Structure formats: structure tokens, C-alpha cells
Image (cartoon, rainbow, N blue to C red):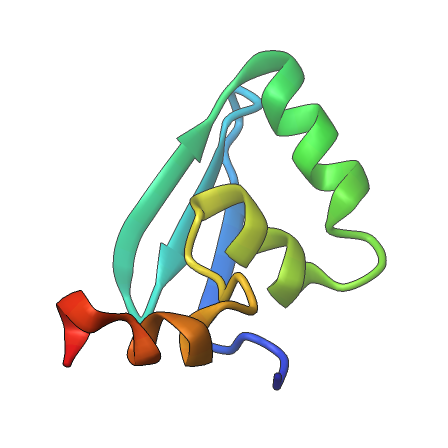
Length: 71
């Protein structure tokens, strides 16, 4: 599984954090959630943004492809 790409974030003057994915707004975090995100983003910002927006692989894609409903 590769590292997520295409995410960017900007901090607003009011303390909010806006996360975009491929140029489209994916999330707006405010208050304590914004502060927690900024701490999480110190290590690997792309992965943190993917986690916080819910746009990441869960590791079960291969199994889902095998499910009878998806055949």
C-alpha cells in the first residue's frame, strides 16, 4: 500500500484547518480537532490527512473484490 497523495491543508487565522484533496475541499477542522490534526500531521502529513478525511485504504480491498456481491 503506497502513501496517500494529493492532500494539502491550510491553517486559517481563526485556527481552523481546511484539508483539500486534488483541489477539492475534503474537511474543515476547528478547535480541539484542528489542534489534534496539526499534532498528527507532524510525522506524515499525507497519511494524517487521509485518515482525518476518511479517504484511505483499509487493507480489505482484495477481500471485497472476492465477495459474491461484487462479482
